[in-house]
Amino acid sequence: MSLNQIGGLSAAPIATDSGHTDPTTGVVSASAVWRSPPANIRVSMSKQGAEIDRLSPSPPMSPVRGGIRADLSVACQALMDGPMEVREHRSGGVGGKIGNKGVPVYVMMPLDSVTMTNGVNRRKAMNASLQALKSAGVEGIMMDVWWGLVERDAPGEYNWGGYSELLEMAKKHGLKVQAVMSFHQCGGNVGDSCTIPLPKWVLEEINNDPDLAYTDQWGRRNNEYLSLGCDTIPCLKGRTPIQCYSDYMRSFRDKFSHLLGDTIVEIQVGMGPAGELRYPSYPEKDGIWRFPGIGAFQCYDKYMLSSLKAAAESYGKPEWGSTGPTDAGEYNNWPEDTNFFKREGGGWNSEYGDFFLSWYSQMLLDHGERILSSATSIFENRGIKLSVKVAGIHWHYGTRSHAPELTAGYYNTRFRDGYLPIARMLARHGAVFNFTCIEMRDHEQPQEAQCAPEKLVQQVTLATREAQVPLAGENALPRYDEYAHEQILKAASLSENDEMCAFTYLRMNPELFQAENWRKFVAFVKKMKEGKDVHKCWEQVEREAEHFVQVSEPLVQEAAVALMH
View (cartoon, rainbow, N blue to C red):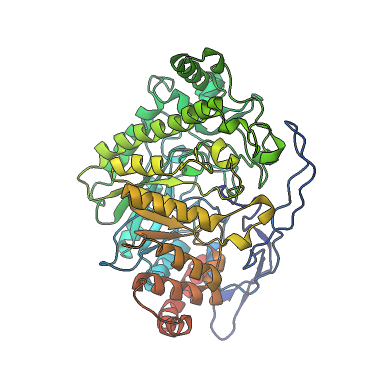
């Protein structure tokens, strides 16, 4: 998300106590202390004096996370046997509306569900947890299918081992699956507690030709995802990146053809860092970017610059083709710190600005078009939907230039709709527009940075409606409170004629199975499935949900017992 969100919010375990056995039940119960996000995230920030084209003072700190959760349920303990994470970007798509009303809920699996040795991580706990999700009324799960695991060692050699087992496990429990073709690196974004790099042979090629990686104006390379500038260059052992992505998806289709349309109902096609259709303009690794910085353009590898040069010559301004904007500040500036993004007389609103931003955003759209065209041909007539994840970049949304969106590749300003072209591109391929930050409210975010997630979601909803493309959503940060659930329900029903086609909940982790959180989650799932035409108070829904909570209780206990063996 994405990094669509606030830095440093990953729910990493900070301490665990030794377990003990309950003498009455014989079930092991270990208490643990976890940092938890506050229900209402607020940020205290102060903006210091702007200096044109110089690095601003350090931006405001990320929210301080407080509170502890002790005595987690046994299901939590089962899931805690290994690195757990809460990453804000991996989103969901379709997968079967419930009749003509209601929004099916999917749950994101842990990032490390499949191990580096291609097995299922925490197998017994995983099995019991999936059964608990099914008992709660969850429609299915979303899982990352990592390029860096499956085709790790050699080009064209695919090891689907762990995914075969995980998909069969989902089928056994009657859960549908949204499979994410994850062509990006895991690690370096919020919540990425495990690291899964790109395939070894791809990294070897990047080492031989560093321009295969996205590059900023200071020469900093980013290995999260291959630069879209080399999409059609046979730079990977004789294949183009697009051919590699296509071959990977084709191998997945052939390996799991018996599950397509039944268990596997959606393929989300990764198109950039964090799996999102965007440039890696706000990299959090090594503290390069911090919320709410404007980010930086990523067009300085030789392949991108070659395209820019050709575009400038075609436009009749060859002098514009040697570099991107030189006055756009640095990663942690604010818009008014820069000549390019400032409100009055900013370069973004000039002829040059329009030329550059049109080229930069069109390159991203063409990248999406190339991959979707391939995915459409590979998966057509297989009974599945395709979806694409778009980042919810809500900070500085209230400014005229929308700087963080521009550096990410979304040409969205006070005077231009940057999401309608994306929606229309997806509509041409019948793909779902998947969007994040659905749970956020404007007032929860730092107003000094003019954050406006609600207004952003409304704009995206209008764009998808006009383009007649299905909209799906996800929460960007882990939230377990009813206040966030209510906001998701509201956002899921923004469309006048239809509801969201699906919602994917972040993420299956220990805190989800904590007693109070689980009770609220089951009620939330029930409310989503019933749809906007059903008017019931939360208390009534929770009373009805108690039955499902009681049914699932022995299942989460089973996860703990499984962990003991």
